[in-house]
Length: 232
Image 1 (cartoon, rainbow, N blue to C red):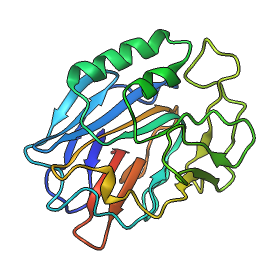
Image 2 (image 1 turned 90 degrees about the horizontal axis):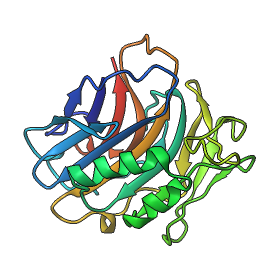
Image 3 (image 1 turned 180 degrees about the horizontal axis):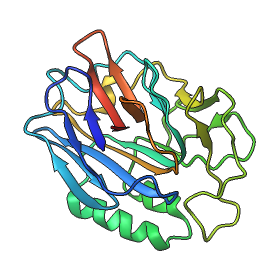
């Protein structure tokens, strides 16, 4: 099950996405268009909320943005690749096109950058502890934390022999950003955004809970924010 929400926030949405635990790369996207929240799996719209995601601004976040965890834990055992955040809502057709183009692209980075992300982590490092952001946002990088296995695992880009993807162990591995939060300037006042990640796992989730793919929210203010998760 995929979920998008922020604890007690309004407009949360969950869905049975399809087969995720098959050791193949999957394309997971969440959007907000100011009226509804949506979840896409491998280019297909799977669920739409009945309301906007939060009771306040999505940008009202005080926790560090995490890849592979949320502020209170729930770490996921998986490979991650190509994590991006856009300050507008991609359309259903754009997401479908993105998925289809990505299946055969020799340079997936170009597909992401063409759509103008606010932050984009290709996650192709082969030994560094820093996850580089390809966009011009000053100072917004990530740090591999907990002994993440960087490099050595083929990334999504199978046509490029140098493409790598980090492996998270589900125990203490994640990426924390250097910025303390996603600033309000990232998001328009009508709560438009897109969160994107590629995930590959062969580990079945046995414990109940929501295991974060990408998360940044304010758990002091009605859990406002964004938490894209896999749960059971």
